[in-house]
Image (cartoon, rainbow, N blue to C red; front, side, top):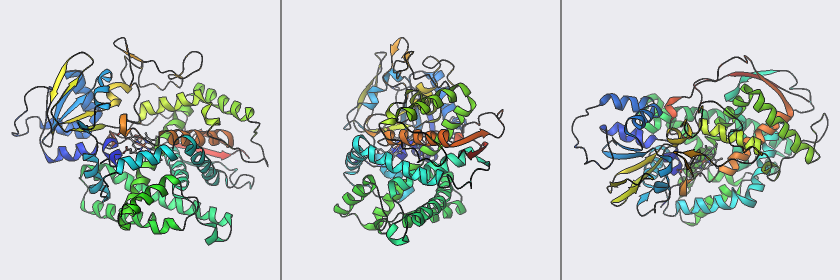
Length: 510
Ligand code: HEM
C-alpha cells in the first residue's frame, strides 16, 4: 500500500516533527531497554532537534556513533549514521520495514488525499514508463520547448537586450518550476486560443501566477508539516490547497494540450479504480508538489556554485560548447533555437559531476521506515541491534555521509570534479574506514522509494543550465557576496533552500 507522497514523509521530516510535538523526546542507545514515558528529562534536546535537525543529529552521531535512538512522540526512532550499514535498512523486506504508513497519514493530513491500495505500484510503473528510458526522450522534448517559451520567447525582438536584475533563487525556481509544470501538466489548448502564439503567451502568464501561489504554500510548508501554523496561516494554507485542487482539477486538465502520460496515466488508473473525481483533483496537487518542489531550488544552487567557481563554470561551458559543436548547432542571431535531446544530455560527465556535487551539498531528505515485526538490524561492524515492532528506523544521509570529511575531504567546499575520475568518467568509488561505499550520495533517497523523477530532474537542471550558458550573459550583482546559508527549517525536506536570495543580472545575448 505505497503512497506516492511517501515522498513527503521521506522528503519532509514533518512526520518526525509532528510526532515530536505530540510527545516526549529522549534518546537511548539502540538495543537498550525501552525508556519509560515519564516527564521530558531533556527538553533542551527537543528544541535543538526542532531548531536545527542536522546540528542535533551530528551531535548525537559524534556522541553515540553509528546508531542511536531518539524517542519522538512515543516512538523510538533508531537513527543509523553508518553509511556502510544503510543496506540493512534500504534493502530490508517490506514485511519488516514499511515505508507507507507515515506517508499515508501525512498526505491525508497535509494534502487531504486518501491513498489507494495500489498507490506505490501504480506510481512505480508509470514513472518507469514515462520518466525513464524512451519516456524520458518525450519528457525532455516537452521540457525543452517549455523552457524555450519561458526563457527565449523574445529572442531576436531586441526586447530583452537590457540587463534585468533579480534574485537568482527566485529566477531559477520560477523558470524551472514553470517549465516542469507545463511539461507535465500540459499547455493551454490552441483550439481555445486560436493561435499557438496566444496559447504560449497564456502559458507564460498562467504558469507565473501558479508559481507565485506555489511559493506561498512552499513557505508555509515546514510549519504546516510540523503542525504549528497560526490561525491566519492555517486559513491561507487552506485557501491555497483549494486553489490548487481547482486549478489542477481533472476537469480542467481535460481541456489542456500535451498533458504528459505520467500525469494522465496515473489519473486514468485512479478513475478506473473508482476514485471520486474530487480526490483525483487532490492527487494532482500531490503530483505537482512531488515534481516541482525540489528541482527549482537545486537549479539555483547549481548556477550559484558555478558562478562562484570560475574554474567550474569554464569547464562546464567548454563541455556545453563542445556538445553543440558536435551536433552542428550554433547559437547565433536570427538562427534557429538550439535543440537539446536526451541523447545529447548523456554526454556531459563534467556537468553531471557538478550536478551531483550540488545535490550532495544541498539535498537532505530523511528516509523513515516503520518496523512491522520484531527484527534485527545488522551493522557493518558486525554488531546486531534488536528492534521491536512499532519502532521506527531513520536515515539522514546528509550528516551520515554527504558531509562526512572522511568520505569527502573538505566536505563543505564545492568541487565540481569531485565525481569525476582522472580520465574524465563518472567516479563512483568513495571509501569509509577503508571500505568502498555503495551509498555515498543519496539526494534521491534509496531503495523502493528512491525518487522516480531523478533522471527527468537531472535533465531539467542540465537543460536549464545549457540555455543559460548558451543564450545569456549573467553575473552576480556583487561577485564578492558570500554564498547564503541553508534555511535550517527545511532539513529533511529534500532540496534545501537558501536563507536569503542573492541578486544577479542577466540579459539575452541575441
Ligand atoms: C532535484 C530534484 C529532486 C530531488 C532532490 C528529489 C528527491 C526525492 C526524494 C529524496 C524522494 C524520497 C525518496 C525516498 O523516500 O527514498 C523523492 C520521491 C519522489 N519524487 Fe523526487 N526529487 C526531485 C525531483 C523530482 C521530480 C522532477 C519528480 C517528478 C517528475 C519527482 C517525483 C517524485 C515522486 C513521485 C516521489 C515519491 C516516490 C515514492 O513514493 O516511491 N521528484 N524525491
